[in-house]
Amino acid sequence: MGETDIHRKWIVRIDQLLNQRLRGQRIYIGSDLLVYYQPGQPRRFVVPDNFIVLDCDPGPRRTFKTWEEQRTPNVVFEVTSRSTKQEDLVFKPKVYEQFGVSEYFLYDPLAEYLRPALQGFRLKNGTLVQMDAAAGGLTCETLGIGLRLAGTALEMIDQVSGELLLTEAEDNARRASQLRESADKYLQFAEQQQQIADQERAAREMAEAKNRQLEEEIKRLRGESQNDDNV
Image 1: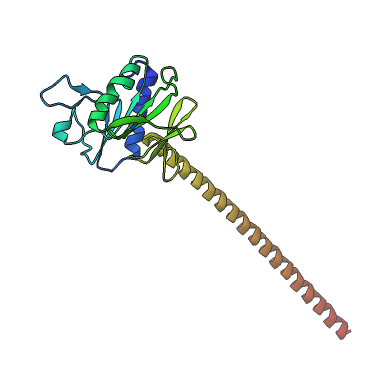
Image 2 (image 1 turned 180 degrees about the vertical axis):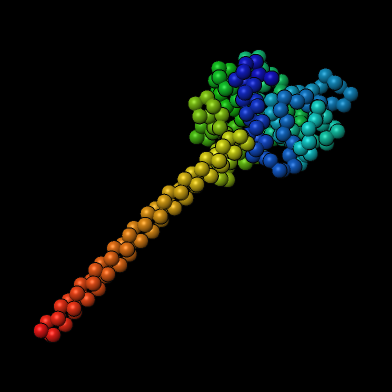
């Protein structure tokens, strides 16, 4: 795990964002889990902060053994800290190249140990080659996700919809806010309709009152005319 609260926070947050984005799919999403990659060699393991394995049972595991799963991680995210910088930049990429990891991303939430603070690598001819940041962002082609920094905070964006990825709690809060907004708009519309109906009713009542007054005036005039004729 990261050496500070902020590193732990971001490892958890990335896991939550990926789980929400990929929910319902046959994809395993691991976080801070021992990944063993050589049978009979218990010291041959690596611990990615966050990783994705495509076409894999999403059920919980105590460890991930590549020879039993017949799968290896496809995408890896590392939250880099002072104690993990060397490992993230030197040791882990070599292991991930052995796995055939398609894309590898490093993020330094403090912007102290990586320059730039967000970096990406893509596998080419068996080697993880650093990506060029387009307009300050990176693309995870495997997952269809864009990555960018907002200040020092990492943001993930759905490449199809362009929407910012949210955790389940954030998405539920957004939906609740949208429902409240829709309810407020409906109530406002209903109030406006009621005001219109009240105005129309008042106009009808006024017209009816005027008609009654007119009818009474006509009756009065007729009565006076008859009295004049009688005289």
